[in-house]
Image 1 (tube, one colour):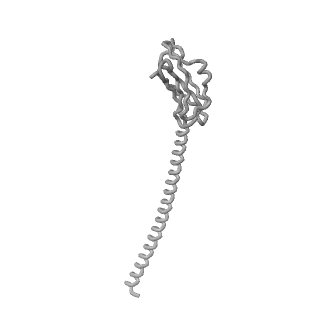
Image 2 (tube, rainbow, N blue to C red):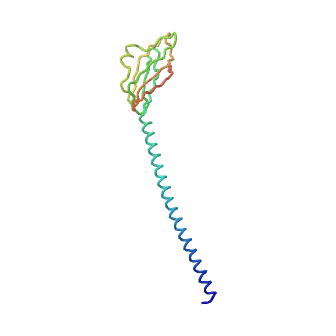
Image 3 (cartoon, rainbow, N blue to C red):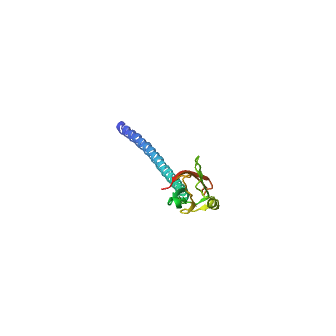
Length: 165
């Protein structure tokens, strides 16, 4: 074998070794990238599951929440306080009171008020009316407070100002 043939063979062997090393490294890199893609897909799936759970919990909490409000309806001589549950969940132990103003009398009729309050359960869409005895000394605008327990048992409170419309 001549010197040129030996050098050519040696160059061919070195080239083959370099090619094999490059091929092995490329294969390892491809395996790592594949594993990284799998982990990213798993992470994305977990994030989607968490988001779905959060949305479901929020919608359950929103759907099941009671929204109790009071209005003053009717003509002055037949006026009534109307307590309504506008929410999607029941309200329990609903109570209603009027914050008195100095020099004004209460429009609540004692017998009617005592019999109907507290309301044991006010289902969604239900309403309870209370007689409003409006006089010159009571006025037609009132600061009211509603309290109730929601489905989870926590105490809720809403302050509203209502007036005869």
